[in-house]
Length: 244
Length: 110
Ligand code: HEM
Ligand code: SF4
Ligand code: SF4
Ligand code: FES
Image 1 (cartoon, helix red, strand yellow):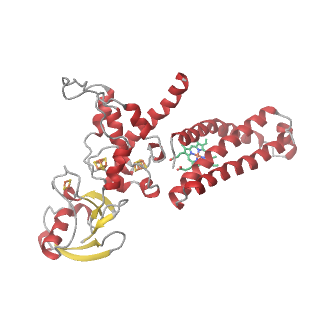
Image 2 (cartoon, each protein chain N blue to C red; image 1 turned 120 degrees about the vertical axis):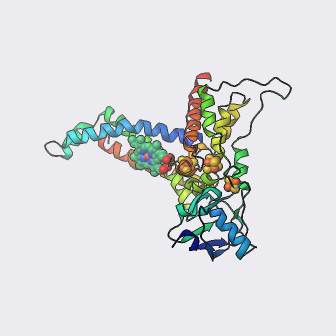
Image 3 (cartoon, protein in one colour; image 1 turned 90 degrees about the vertical axis):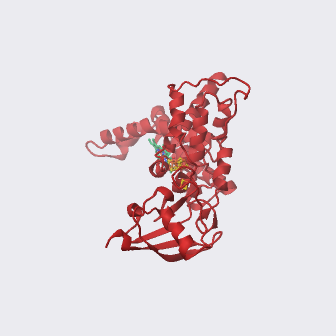
């Protein structure tokens, strides 16, 4: 049987808020079909009320992440052939986030935590100042560059068991962004970032198990960024002692 | 449920325990050569300030370390939080301190 004749049995989570159930759809199999193609086919040809989210379809915008066979993935760049178990597929909304409806998770808690982690740039100059040259080879810049390609997809956040167990935990993506900003030489208030990641939901809750790094579709390593924050906050404890 | 303060206390107590664990195992291996007797153990520890300090520090470090470690587990797995979590942490710390402290006292100065 060629891929073109095949059918895929897809279990899709339907429901709003905490309530819901799986609904089964038969979807024609196609060459190079992505999980997002499957979900879009269902919405266009089987049930127009299916709610899901996507924008770019090329792995840039970070809006299409869902649980596919229990694993968080960017659905627009995940080929069915790579993840289907036989001819079946299960698609659910992202883990660790409230569900708005069907496959659309509520991203608010995820982004609120970016702000709580002070993962916001504190400008050191104004738009009227001349552009500052950034030393691309400095080790701090290398650290920042390592995490800069984050697309805010929340795959890591869904993969993190510490987020599941501890709802206050800021999570890998917000902490990684805090670390990139901490290492940005244009950042005006790196100490405020260290303060923000040292509270009850801060970087010290991470158990270093690395699910974030394992599942990040951009192959980023939030675990390493968090280790950096732990190191800098710990060093600061001794620095403060000396200065006191 | 770990802020910087608890994190540092857990890592520093682990740092203290690491050499103590090695010392404890080394003495165990040495002590069981040719059998083990109560007299032999007490002969070593009774009246010894060095052993009191060694095991006393061990008990102190374990009390801090295990209380913080179990605090994390009961929060993440059982959802304990707020005052209940605080009470749990202190109960474990003080419980281990009392139990361990009594044993150390019993084999040294009691
Ligand atoms: C040399 C001895 C020890 C070292 C180096 C050590 C080190 C550590 C470290 C680094 C953690 C943090 C793990 C994490 O947060 O992911 C931890 C957690 C923990 N430790 Fe220890 N430990 C030692 C001995 C002990 C002992 C003797 C006990 C019990 C009496 C104990 C109980 C715990 C518990 C309950 C946790 C929490 C588990 C977790 O947070 O994942 N540890 N230990
Ligand atoms: S390494 Fe830390 S942030 Fe990453 S998944 Fe594990 S606990 Fe979460
Ligand atoms: S770190 Fe990776 S998995 Fe996490 S939000 Fe950014 S791109 Fe997505
Ligand atoms: S739709 Fe933009 S990353 Fe998938």
